[in-house]
Amino acid sequence: MADEDKIQTLIEKTAEAELGGGQDRIDVQHKKGKWTARERIHQLMDQDSFEEIDKFVLHQSTDFGMDKKRFSGDGVVTGYGRINGRLAYIFAQDFTILGGSLSLAVSEKICKVMDLARKNGAPLVCLNDSGGARIQEGVSSLAGYGNIFMRNVLSSGVIPQISAIMGPCAGGAVYSPALTDFIFMVEKSSYMFITGPQVIKSVTHEEVTPEKLGGALTHNATSGVAHFSGKDDQTVLAMIRELLSFLPQNYQEKPPCVEPTDDADRIDMELREVVPESPRQPYNIRRIIDSVVDNHHFFEVQARHALNIIVGFARLNGHTVGVVANQPSFLAGCLDISASIKGARFVRFCDCFNIPLITFCDVPGFLPGTAQEFGGIIKHGAKLIYAYCEAVVPKITVITRKAYGGAYIVMSSKHLWGDINYAYPTAEIAVMGPEGAVNIVFKKEISAADDPAKKEAEMIEEYRNIFASPYLAAERGYIDEIILPEQTRPKLIRALESLKNKQDSMPKKKHDNLPL
Amino acid sequence: MAGTPVIKMEAMKMENQIPSPVNGTVKAIAVKVGDNVSTDETLMVLEQA
Figure 1 (cartoon, rainbow over the protein chains, first blue to last red):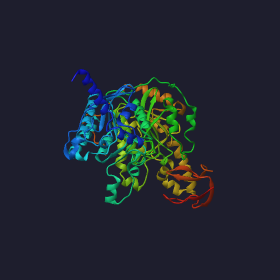
Figure 2 (cartoon, chains in turn cyan, purple):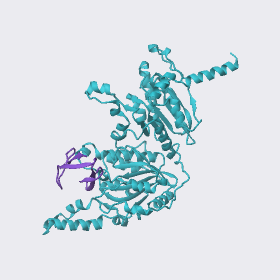
Figure 3 (cartoon, rainbow over the protein chains, first blue to last red):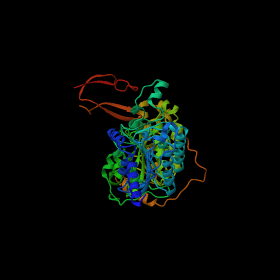
Figure 4 (tube, chains in turn green, yellow):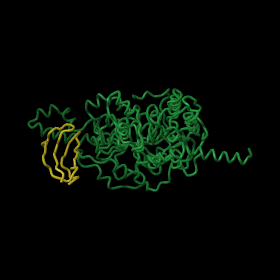
């Protein structure tokens, strides 16, 4: 064959491969409001930056007539490119080829990019859209999944791993996203579950739709398995780009710094009005967060789950920070099982990737009740304590109002080696609230009084003035400074700047034993 | 009017104002001030205008 023919052959084979399962199947994908694998990759990555590999891989299976059904690339598109100018590796399952089902060949393609990502210290993006294991391949397909899971774990904490569910993701396949750092879901066109509605119906006789069982809302709000949701492919891909913009490439790098466009000394007098006079009035902690962060921009994580705690990314003077905050307007800001887990996971991720932690504390305690106790709040609450203790990134805390009991300790207190701990004048740092404390400490005086109710009210007022304040903690050095609310932003930025070269480490060990 | 607070509930020493979900009239109040209430308990009946 002449050389020009060889060139022409390559061009034709490439064009054919890039049609995946063929134009008809591409059309079906589009009709469902979904993009193809390559369309998603090109949308996500910087223009013209994608380098595809393994485009001509064919599965090697012959059982069940599969040798007649071969498509170039098989059910996944893999390669690398740039996102926000930085290297990232990607695999995007191709639903147009045999339903995106996973064969050994598909898993080998995926494992190849996972190994490259890990060895080259760059983030891995995983776009899931698959009918699951390719049944015709039998246990080889399972082996494929296992090989992927092993690599998810090898890379865990080494490089950021981001998953998006952009179609079906069922059975064992869900464990790969579950092992990654963040899961995005596309609303209405994606779902994830271990066992689907049909099997559930035959075993437990429950009737449930795929959307209800494992759609974006279910996993973002109820199970807390997913961290983000977007209304379509384009929105989710844009959110992934934004998330990556906060993160370093790998655990050995600091997060990227952008040129700040917001005044580092900006004060906000309105912050004096946020915490209400009455400790019984709720308020939205977002007013404080949104005021102090660069350009008032807060990228919230798990916005629909465990609403009593807020976590997310922001920048202070151009530097990425992770924010954790109790939300007084939900469940009175109490910590409970879901909030403890949500907080702990986020804190540990930030520590993995050198992201300083800013904590806003207004917590009256842990949520009481048998549901919490039987649900194991003891071990789940312990996760959050563990996470803060273990974190060696800069830790800055601001107590805005309540900080009672164990919850005071949990929320990045000085005792868990918080680096800089601030409190507002409205802070109440105490073992418990005045009402509870007075009924224990002054029980005798109250019952002996002529007017017990009046005595109780007096004692509550006295206790409040002495104990429900930041001064006793400040006198002991548990609070470094009591600050004027309007100065929160400059204080945080200066503290952060002072901590930028912080070095600390946990004692050497094989690995931790975080209470799970 | 939708959004007007119609009940003040206290839980975990926090006061929460519950707004009316509809424009309408209060037809019945099923509780009195100071009552302890449970999940799913009817507090108030509103007739949508």
